[in-house]
Image (cartoon, rainbow, N blue to C red; front, side, top):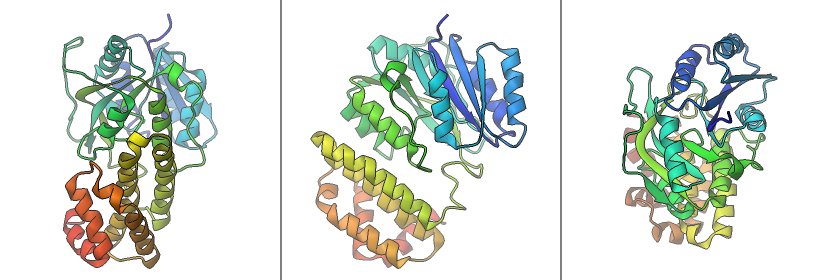
Length: 329
């Protein structure tokens, strides 16, 4: 029987967390799934763990490949996925038992090409997922792609620009792949291209995905990030948001606002965490914020973000002082 959902899980150096992840995915109330584990040349015991799960459950497919990064691993999974819809899970995270049933069911009911849910950032010590009975009714929201972008670009909401709390109709993304040349913000380009092709997107207002943020290597782990890392993130975010702004007039201000928050303010906050101003970084951020100031101020960005941008333009040193307590403590 053709699976309703293909779940792609890149696996690399997560031996300590992999079993928790796989048990949560295999325990889904939606049984018509295939789980594609892509062992990205992991040097620990992850490959053996993947094979053990495949031996126990015929829904599990394992791909062993040379290490090439998360984007290449996801692309390998996309090549073999056969489900009606495709979802992604990171191998150190875990999901609620009803996650894929909830999103699949609502996507089908709404004839939607995409579905998304809320997520919680967790240290693994507490379970912040919503536990519901399979098939419960709930208030689902249905959007066009512009309204969906407004939702994920609102930094106060637990949705954001990621692929792992989304579900994509396979036909929608059959010609899309992740850019393997990018180390960060690779989710953004893939998601935005899929979103632009979507006519209807549903939002399930429950926390169904737990993002484990404490592991070194996770996206929110900042200890080893140099300024070059943030420059590259800014460049990647700018590239795709400029494309959004040029191709969709109705999303222009939103795209510019997102770029300034997730690009320029990320650089500014990196300096706050480092405890010193970098002259070149200051010059870059001030220039980009000034060039976009009209769009920023007339956009729907939260007032706090607008104030932060104005403060950095006026006085990076004062911005450092104000933000230090918030970001560093």
